[in-house]
Image (cartoon, rainbow, N blue to C red; front, side):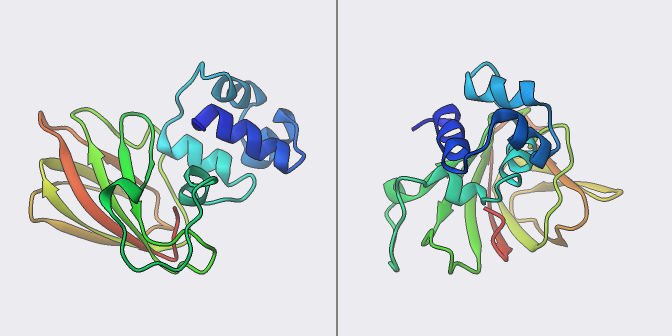
Length: 180
């Protein structure tokens, strides 16, 4: 299932109209319609906002048909791929409701970002840049991090990620409790 099909399926499973989901998520019902018709590819921030209308985490959303049991090891091709707006993320670990940590490998091509809206949720997040560079805005602070640099912040603070560089940025991030 691709993103539009997943969203429509999930909305129908919850017995919601596009208008009801839009109201819950604080977005326009035309946006929900455009996403479901694949007319719009939502940013990570916009998709998170829409999914908060259920509520469901991004990881659970992108793994609806791939729920895993209590496993210990995961091959690269078994990681749940998610993301949007040019940003690709791979979620590591079990996808059941007992998860207390989200570990992600994230890939930001040049110019890619999490969207124009700042993200905000209830967690702590930390990360380490593996290659390239990433501009991270947290509240009023903004910094460009390069390979080997790291970050740690309370995600209640509005935040955003953007690759201002000319090469792909890869990073590893973790959040607890899981926001994906």
